[in-house]
Length: 201
Image (cartoon, rainbow, N blue to C red):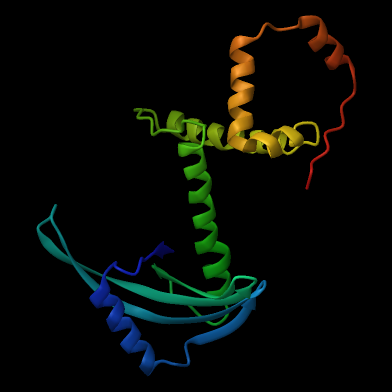
Protein backbone atom coordinates (compact mmCIF):
# COMPACT_ATOMS: atom_id res chain seq x y z
CA UNK A 1 0.00 0.00 0.00
CA UNK A 2 1.74 3.17 -1.22
CA UNK A 3 0.38 6.60 -0.30
CA UNK A 4 -0.49 8.97 -3.13
CA UNK A 5 -0.64 12.65 -2.23
CA UNK A 6 -3.08 14.96 -4.03
CA UNK A 7 -0.35 16.25 -6.37
CA UNK A 8 1.14 12.82 -7.21
CA UNK A 9 0.38 11.56 -10.72
CA UNK A 10 -2.54 14.02 -11.13
CA UNK A 11 -3.49 12.99 -14.67
CA UNK A 12 -3.41 9.30 -13.78
CA UNK A 13 -5.53 9.92 -10.66
CA UNK A 14 -8.05 11.86 -12.76
CA UNK A 15 -8.29 8.84 -15.07
CA UNK A 16 -9.07 6.59 -12.10
CA UNK A 17 -11.85 8.92 -10.93
CA UNK A 18 -13.39 8.77 -14.41
CA UNK A 19 -13.00 4.97 -14.41
CA UNK A 20 -14.77 4.76 -11.06
CA UNK A 21 -17.86 6.39 -12.59
CA UNK A 22 -18.13 3.27 -14.76
CA UNK A 23 -17.56 0.91 -11.80
CA UNK A 24 -19.68 2.44 -9.04
CA UNK A 25 -20.36 -1.02 -7.59
CA UNK A 26 -16.76 -0.97 -6.27
CA UNK A 27 -17.76 1.23 -3.32
CA UNK A 28 -18.13 0.51 0.40
CA UNK A 29 -19.61 2.79 3.07
CA UNK A 30 -18.83 1.90 6.67
CA UNK A 31 -18.27 3.41 10.12
CA UNK A 32 -14.72 3.38 11.51
CA UNK A 33 -14.68 4.36 15.17
CA UNK A 34 -16.53 7.65 15.43
CA UNK A 35 -16.04 8.41 11.72
CA UNK A 36 -17.86 7.55 8.50
CA UNK A 37 -15.91 6.23 5.54
CA UNK A 38 -16.69 5.97 1.85
CA UNK A 39 -14.09 3.79 0.12
CA UNK A 40 -13.99 3.18 -3.61
CA UNK A 41 -11.44 1.40 -5.79
CA UNK A 42 -10.43 0.57 -9.35
CA UNK A 43 -8.52 -2.66 -10.05
CA UNK A 44 -6.17 -3.67 -12.86
CA UNK A 45 -5.08 -0.21 -13.96
CA UNK A 46 -2.21 -0.24 -16.48
CA UNK A 47 0.64 2.11 -15.63
CA UNK A 48 3.58 2.90 -17.94
CA UNK A 49 6.75 4.72 -16.95
CA UNK A 50 10.14 5.45 -18.43
CA UNK A 51 13.07 3.78 -16.65
CA UNK A 52 16.18 5.99 -17.01
CA UNK A 53 18.51 3.12 -16.03
CA UNK A 54 17.43 0.79 -18.83
CA UNK A 55 16.29 3.69 -21.07
CA UNK A 56 13.15 1.71 -21.84
CA UNK A 57 9.47 2.09 -21.14
CA UNK A 58 8.19 -0.28 -18.46
CA UNK A 59 4.62 -1.25 -17.66
CA UNK A 60 2.82 -2.76 -14.72
CA UNK A 61 -0.69 -3.19 -13.35
CA UNK A 62 -1.74 -1.24 -10.25
CA UNK A 63 -4.85 -1.14 -8.09
CA UNK A 64 -6.14 2.24 -6.91
CA UNK A 65 -8.20 2.97 -3.77
CA UNK A 66 -9.49 6.16 -2.17
CA UNK A 67 -11.04 6.68 1.28
CA UNK A 68 -13.09 9.80 2.06
CA UNK A 69 -13.57 10.09 5.81
CA UNK A 70 -16.00 12.46 7.56
CA UNK A 71 -16.55 13.20 11.26
CA UNK A 72 -17.94 15.84 13.59
CA UNK A 73 -16.44 17.12 16.83
CA UNK A 74 -16.64 20.25 18.99
CA UNK A 75 -14.84 22.25 16.28
CA UNK A 76 -17.39 21.33 13.60
CA UNK A 77 -17.55 19.03 10.56
CA UNK A 78 -14.35 17.61 9.03
CA UNK A 79 -13.34 15.62 5.99
CA UNK A 80 -10.07 13.97 4.98
CA UNK A 81 -9.13 12.01 1.89
CA UNK A 82 -6.62 9.16 1.73
CA UNK A 83 -5.41 7.62 -1.53
CA UNK A 84 -3.23 4.54 -2.08
CA UNK A 85 -2.03 2.23 -4.83
CA UNK A 86 -1.25 -1.43 -4.38
CA UNK A 87 0.15 -4.37 -6.28
CA UNK A 88 -2.75 -6.56 -5.12
CA UNK A 89 -6.42 -6.10 -6.11
CA UNK A 90 -9.14 -4.90 -3.75
CA UNK A 91 -12.43 -6.63 -2.98
CA UNK A 92 -15.38 -5.87 -0.71
CA UNK A 93 -13.99 -8.41 1.75
CA UNK A 94 -10.46 -6.96 2.04
CA UNK A 95 -10.66 -3.24 1.30
CA UNK A 96 -11.56 -2.02 4.82
CA UNK A 97 -8.89 -4.15 6.47
CA UNK A 98 -6.18 -3.16 4.00
CA UNK A 99 -6.94 0.58 4.13
CA UNK A 100 -7.42 0.93 7.88
CA UNK A 101 -5.22 -1.74 9.42
CA UNK A 102 -2.41 -1.86 6.85
CA UNK A 103 -2.05 1.43 5.02
CA UNK A 104 -2.91 3.74 7.90
CA UNK A 105 -0.87 1.70 10.38
CA UNK A 106 2.11 2.40 8.12
CA UNK A 107 1.44 6.11 8.71
CA UNK A 108 1.59 5.50 12.49
CA UNK A 109 4.98 3.82 12.06
CA UNK A 110 6.24 6.83 10.10
CA UNK A 111 4.99 9.16 12.87
CA UNK A 112 7.01 7.17 15.42
CA UNK A 113 10.11 7.47 13.25
CA UNK A 114 9.57 11.25 13.02
CA UNK A 115 9.46 11.40 16.83
CA UNK A 116 12.73 9.48 16.99
CA UNK A 117 14.34 11.74 14.40
CA UNK A 118 13.24 15.14 15.69
CA UNK A 119 12.15 14.93 19.34
CA UNK A 120 15.26 14.06 21.29
CA UNK A 121 16.29 10.57 20.17
CA UNK A 122 18.72 11.83 17.49
CA UNK A 123 17.78 8.94 15.18
CA UNK A 124 19.75 9.37 11.96
CA UNK A 125 20.41 7.04 9.03
CA UNK A 126 23.54 4.99 9.54
CA UNK A 127 25.34 3.34 6.68
CA UNK A 128 26.98 -0.05 7.00
CA UNK A 129 28.11 -2.85 4.76
CA UNK A 130 26.48 -5.25 7.19
CA UNK A 131 22.72 -5.36 6.64
CA UNK A 132 22.16 -7.16 9.96
CA UNK A 133 23.94 -4.34 11.81
CA UNK A 134 21.66 -1.74 10.18
CA UNK A 135 18.56 -3.76 11.05
CA UNK A 136 19.82 -4.25 14.61
CA UNK A 137 20.29 -0.50 15.10
CA UNK A 138 16.81 0.18 13.73
CA UNK A 139 15.15 -2.39 16.02
CA UNK A 140 17.11 -1.25 19.08
CA UNK A 141 15.98 2.34 18.49
CA UNK A 142 12.32 1.24 18.43
CA UNK A 143 12.80 -0.84 21.59
CA UNK A 144 14.43 2.13 23.34
CA UNK A 145 11.55 4.39 22.27
CA UNK A 146 9.00 1.86 23.57
CA UNK A 147 10.79 1.49 26.92
CA UNK A 148 11.12 5.26 27.21
CA UNK A 149 7.38 5.73 26.70
CA UNK A 150 6.65 3.12 29.39
CA UNK A 151 9.01 4.84 31.85
CA UNK A 152 7.65 8.33 31.15
CA UNK A 153 4.07 7.18 31.70
CA UNK A 154 4.72 5.66 35.12
CA UNK A 155 2.87 7.32 37.97
CA UNK A 156 6.17 8.28 39.67
CA UNK A 157 7.37 10.39 36.71
CA UNK A 158 4.03 11.60 35.33
CA UNK A 159 3.83 14.83 37.42
CA UNK A 160 7.20 15.88 35.94
CA UNK A 161 6.00 15.01 32.42
CA UNK A 162 2.88 17.15 32.92
CA UNK A 163 4.99 20.05 34.15
CA UNK A 164 7.84 19.84 31.60
CA UNK A 165 6.34 17.84 28.67
CA UNK A 166 7.86 14.56 27.44
CA UNK A 167 10.66 16.34 25.61
CA UNK A 168 11.45 18.51 28.65
CA UNK A 169 11.45 15.48 30.95
CA UNK A 170 13.89 13.61 28.69
CA UNK A 171 16.14 16.69 28.66
CA UNK A 172 15.96 16.93 32.46
CA UNK A 173 16.83 13.26 32.90
CA UNK A 174 19.79 13.56 30.51
CA UNK A 175 21.06 16.64 32.37
CA UNK A 176 20.70 14.83 35.70
CA UNK A 177 22.68 11.86 34.39
CA UNK A 178 25.45 14.10 33.02
CA UNK A 179 25.93 16.63 35.81
CA UNK A 180 25.10 15.02 39.14
CA UNK A 181 27.04 12.60 41.27
CA UNK A 182 25.66 9.09 41.63
CA UNK A 183 24.47 8.17 45.13
CA UNK A 184 25.41 4.48 45.12
CA UNK A 185 23.96 3.84 48.58
CA UNK A 186 20.56 5.24 47.58
CA UNK A 187 20.55 3.22 44.35
CA UNK A 188 21.36 0.08 46.36
CA UNK A 189 18.48 0.79 48.77
CA UNK A 190 16.06 1.35 45.88
CA UNK A 191 17.23 -1.87 44.26
CA UNK A 192 16.37 -3.87 47.38
CA UNK A 193 12.75 -2.66 47.38
CA UNK A 194 10.14 -4.44 45.30
CA UNK A 195 8.66 -2.13 42.70
CA UNK A 196 5.36 -2.60 40.96
CA UNK A 197 5.30 -0.20 37.99
CA UNK A 198 1.93 1.50 37.50
CA UNK A 199 1.04 3.40 34.35
CA UNK A 200 -1.14 6.49 34.21
CA UNK A 201 -3.33 5.12 31.40
